[in-house]
Length: 300
Image (cartoon, rainbow, N blue to C red; front, top):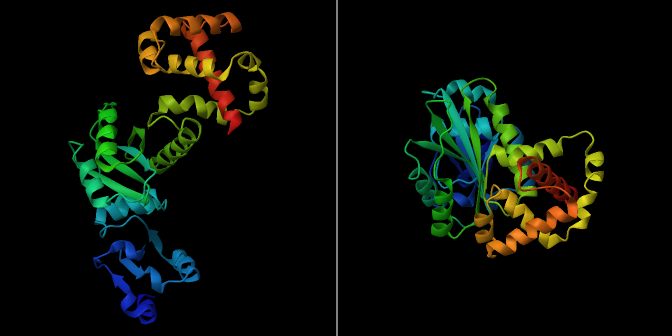
């Protein structure tokens, strides 16, 4: 097949060759790992669709992929389960950190180097397309350890003038079910971006309430129980939501809302008076937070 493609595209085609402007080419991968680039101007939409049937499309390329990067790309992006056993020195555990940026003008090489510099161990970065990718982090132990992700996202956003969103996955064992665990987190990231768009860093703790709401077989019945929210104006509801997201810490919420602590306390008391639900304690706070999420879910 390669000989036929070379005969058809001639000088417009590269095989395992670095191009001066990688973005001028559409990139594909064969089953045996060869990376093929075809000039976009020489490729019709129909030809691109046909090639995507026989070859694996690669996107977000500033350079040729290494053997390990190619294996992870085919595993995570294309769902090729045969790639997992091909990793030369697998770690006992992995964590996937998904990222999404609104901008498309980022230099991927510089961006990748910046991300690699934020981790102590070597990471693999897989691009799904120009705005979305996955950081594959090796883990020696199953225990969850936090990195300073807020500082990291601030640094990357500032250096590259981008709006960046991260989903911090859980640590998963290197086993046959690894792809399904990753795919579930991919769905969680989409759910979070749809329903909590103003947040920039997501974890399972942020998404789990949304998963319960999204998958509930009697969602309409649940939403009928939210009539108490109609008593509350939009501004007060947003204030309460911020208070709950700040772990019921009045001082922290007031600072985030640019509001005096006493003013916030007055609004919290007003909400309790109108609804009869005490959000200063865990049970009431948990119920109202789920109610707010369910109410916002209904609007999307």
